[in-house]
Image (cartoon, rainbow over all chains, first blue to last red; front, side, top):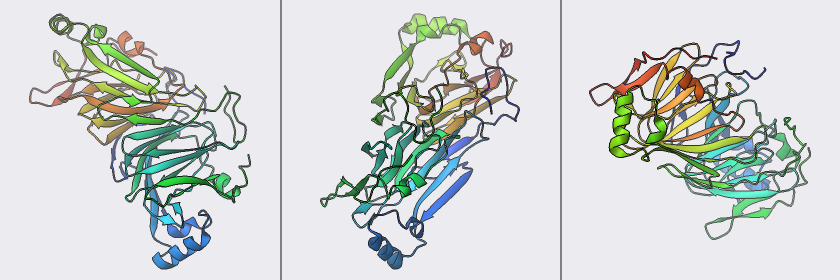
Length: 208
Length: 208
């Protein structure tokens, strides 16, 4: 679909602006979608597979681990998706609970993450080997630049809730992380109530 | 600049993600720009010119009326601008204090407004004559679809602060409102402590 210049209204019906009611606990009144991830969905993503299996056996595969609400209008070329991500606290082995993570399919697309509640880390990596970890607490944000693979990690003891916003044409490539045997860095307990990053010895580099 | 596919890193240096510290009073630690608007800058935008001149004479043309912080990286094709808008309360005649308002130069570009503080109205209009007014309070948001001219209005008695996010290539067309003798609707006092909209009898339609 071509970009529309001023004065040339699009061929489709214009979207009518609507109110979004964004909870600090996560969730959007006015959402167009909700999806949920359960413990059983997270097989193979934590490095300590034994710890993951023990957790699923002890607490069930249907235990909610994170959920996302989002809102989108029609998919015009300049449209945005607005959502909330609510990531419950916990650890699997030494690793803090995280979301699967993704690179945008259109890799140059940026994404805003604004923290509403909790304490988390945004883990960010590039296919050429850069890695950054930025801690977020309420009022803190990261505008994730294009070309950065990114994942949310909950390093606190309450839900880590973010408001996000990205271009509706961005798409998500989740496989890039699995194909690399996980992200290059792991966010783990430092043994003193905090977090640190350590190298993921299984990581074999991102393949373009 | 072309869109970059997965695995093709851009020719410029990648942006390094940075922390943004977003105040509920407005303002961004980590901003790349701040701009301010003063009472004297707002000549011709309120319908009651006598009230505006009296206000400037009584309280000075250098009185701050709103200010914006924003952050942007390099201007890659998928980049976002993140900012805060802080609009001080007040009235000029019957009209509540507002920002100039704009249509994006690339008219299909959407923009998220998320209310951090205060009570305001987002006034939204299309060039073919549609008009909407949506009240915002903390936690409420509007994802302004493309093709909607939009302005913030403070209908409360404290600063109206929003977090915004839009595509860095969107641009702003401010002249479209001036050329039309103002927006089609005015947000005015209802005489009972609230707000209402009334038609702007000076409005002569938007010209594409």
